[in-house]
Image (tube, rainbow, N blue to C red; front, side):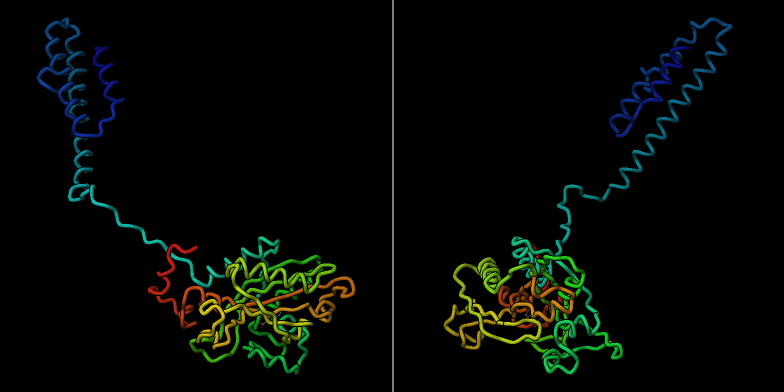
Length: 338
Ligand code: PHE
């Protein structure tokens, strides 16, 4: 009787997971030479007074081994039914890889170059007030330069608008009162322009700002030279042209030699051999003062560039509208690009 209980314990601990193990179990316990049969054979040796108890226990044990067998059989069959019709040797379906947007790719490249020079990324609101987008940047009301940027107004009194440049982030950062500042500000900007292959009513800019003691135009030039070399290569030539921005004085525009014709003149550079890529200058003392910064002690430079133009050039894209139409056939071409 003790043996029976031991066998029962043994079975209790068994894990039968496949047909082979189940068959081994059947042979061991329920086969013609199996344990159950053998125990039955011992019945005749059991003393009469114990026969009843032994018989009962053995019977229970037999039922137990059989029902265990049936239940394992069922689960194993269930599982194989579930898998039948599946060919597990077939190759799997590849999960399609996503891709980064070309504007993100270009923004990341620009930002990482300046990060290596110690510039930190700062972001600001796309909806801002008139002060941060215009007035504090030395564009008081009725200033003619406001016409340079066709603005989408959300309200007029007080004036809230979609920022026309990321220069509003300059104001936000300078007004925090922590110096020095060395930031790069990527973001989306809005201008009420006719949509065409070359311009859109929204686009992206990266602006840079460096404010500290004794910052000079030479620092600005050296920073931008480094950027151009890293971005476009060592052979690309650079030129500065005097320009005008209300928030910088002196101001300049920077051109690089045409990446396509290398300065010979082609349709992309309109036969000039040069491509205009950014505006820059020394931050106007009035802008510093508007943000509570002592312009006798501190000076700084700022520059701003579009992201769309270099992305068009780098990827050979002919129409700026492709960037925002999100045609998967277009976007898929950037899979794997970093
Ligand atoms: N904010 C200017 C623009 O959008 C670019 C610029 C930034 C020029 C900083 C000079 C200095 O056109």
